[in-house]
Structures are given as C-alpha cells and as structure tokens.
Length: 264
Ligand code: ADP
Image (tube, rainbow, N blue to C red; front, side, top):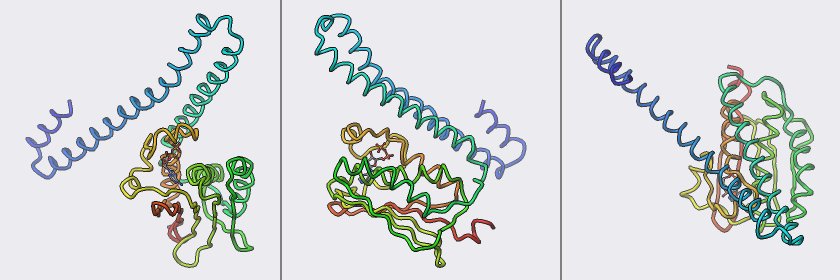
C-alpha cells in the first residue's frame, strides 16, 4: 500500500526521499479524491434527468394512458430531459478526450479573426431570439496563433454563448480581438448582464460549479463549459482572465503567450 512505501523510503534512504515520496502520495490521494468526486457528480447529474424520464414513462403507462393532451405535453418534457443527458454526455466525452491529449501540444495555425467571425455568425440567431446583439471588432488583418482550430472554436462558442445566456439582460455582447503588441494576443468577450460576485470567480472553471443552479438548468447549462475551456487553454498555454462587476457585467478574456514564448 501507499503507507508501506512511505515507511520503506524513510527506513532506507533518509529524510529527503521521505519528503518527496510523502508529497507524491498526498498529490496522488488528492487526484484520486478529485476523480471519485467527479464520478459521483457526473452520476448525480445524469441520474436527475433519467429519474424524471422514468417518472414520465410510468405516468404515461398508468394515470395518463388515455389523456392524449397530457401525453403530448409529457413527451415534450421527456425530449428535453433526454437532450439534457445528451449534452452532458457530449461534455463529459470532450473533457475525457482533452485529458487524454493533455500532454500533447496542439498542432496548427489558427486565424482568430476568421474563427470568431464563424462563431458569432453561428450564435447570432440564438442570441437574437433572447434579445441579444453580438458585435465583433477586430483590425483588418488576420490574427494568427498556434493551436487546434476545433478546440479554439469550442472556447469561443462557450464564452460567447455564456455571455449571451447569463448577460441576456444587458442586450449586447462585445467580442474583441487584439493582435500581439508585446503582451500576447488577446480575445475578450464582454457582457452587460448581472455580473458575478467576487467569491464565485475563482471557482468558475471547476467541473459542475454553477453560480446559480436553477438559472444554469433553465439556460441549458451542464456546468462543464468553463472546465472544458480551461482544459483547452492550458493545452494552448493560454490563460483565462475574468473581470466582473456585479450589476455591470463580466469580461472573459483569453490571453495567448507571445509567439516567441509559445515556440520556446
Ligand atoms: P454552464 O453549463 O452552467 O453554463 P459553465 O461552466 O459554462 O457552466 O459556467 C459556470 C457558471 O458560471 C454558470 O452556471 C454561470 O452561473 C456562471 N457564468 C458563466 N459565464 C457567465 C457570465 N458571462 N455572466 C454571469 N455568470 C456566468
């Protein structure tokens, strides 16, 4: 067992190795703990819509058997619950694929102006439906970073979709791309919604962390979006910066390393 290894290390080779081995075990235990918490959380998140689905199936077999109107309504709810499970499974698979790839540097050259254009175009109909206008601003040249195109698209989708959903009341989302002028390339997504209280900010990228569980549910969140964003950005050696003022909105920015640092 792990404890025996600790004892051996002390007995044979002295204090410095003991310290090292003790730290490794603590880290291993912490990771084990995180993994089992994650499995428990994921199971719980899947179980909730599944229980609801099963409940409706039973109702349709029993009390609602001859009520066509009720059955129609229940089928709609069941489809919603099944979609929710499907989104969760997609996000869980994304996370596990990213973990498998975490030690491989992403390959490729990506024009942030081009992918931001695509993502904004794709999200505008959804945004318009909830009364949000998406504005994209950038210079007239491409802004190239090293990275994986699909993964960076996923980052922009998540940040812009969150800004629209949670900042809906602000009516507007500003996406900006600034080329590297010495501090690294910057992408920012600003909303004018309710903002996020300071104590929540450091925890936003935790798996299944939500500021408001109910609003995340109604807005079709899984609680995994920002965890996926963080994984992708770590792989790209880029950083997520969050600035938020309750009542004034939030800015989620991605700062890429200077190209020379990224290659080095
Ligand atoms: P979800 O799938 O619930 O949207 P995310 O990981 O994408 O999960 O985000 C975690 C939580 O952070 C959300 O549930 C929401 O409470 C909060 N959040 C994210 N973006 C914003 C934003 N732009 N404004 C306010 N709250 C936000």
